[in-house]
Amino acid sequence: MDGQWFRRFGDPEPDALKLICFPHAGGAASAYQQLYRRLRPHVEVLAVQYPGRQDRRLETPVADIGELAAVIAGKLADGETAAPFAFFGHSMGALVAYETARLLEERGVPAPRRLFLSARGAPGPRRSPHDVLPDDEAILAAVRRLGGTGVALHDPEVVAMVLPALRADYAALAAYSWTPREPLHMPVSVLCGDADPVVSVEEASGWRAFTRAETEVRVFPGGHFYVDQRLDDVAEVVLRGIRSASAARAGNGACHDRTPVSDVRG
Image (cartoon, rainbow, N blue to C red; front, side, top):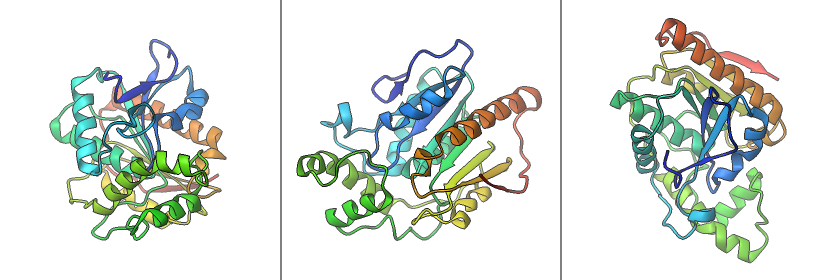
């Protein structure tokens, strides 16, 4: 698998399940190191490294969700993805994960066994007002409000370093236009915080219309970056979901009937 785009954490067991993670706006592959530590050695965790951050900071960021998903889908289609794998996307990463999964299914190549969509409402004809920000100050204010950046946004040098990626990512969110398509054929787990200031539980639950397979909704205490405080619980949901989807695919084939949403608060 392309080492420029996908970062592997540690050495998994030979038969480990594979989880490919998509970072939030302004985020990088390293955001998933802690999740990897909770899932090892049962799950091989890889994280997408978008251009324009960390060791790819000299590259031009991709300011288009569809273009980013197309590149990632192409890399996965050309790489070693025959083994069972799932996607986990947080915030903007949930959109990129969804669009990537959709492209893989449409191309008839191996697609995720399960899709984990975190801290993001389902797309629709209207853009979220939280995605359309007029300038750098508004972007920085929004990021500070959400928390979870892991960087000191009061430091001018740090701000200068992270702003190019943040500008590109918020430009991609503002320009994103969802095109209605056939629902996916993979099960979906939706995860969100009950106090998220930009994503309501109702908006997150809207993802149930995007797949013909079963949908699970898990609501956790916390805000947009609830994962930071509930990492053990999230890891448990991910591990159980991957194992369930892999077992179902191996025994019964893909599920094409959507079951009612399960709203589990924990």
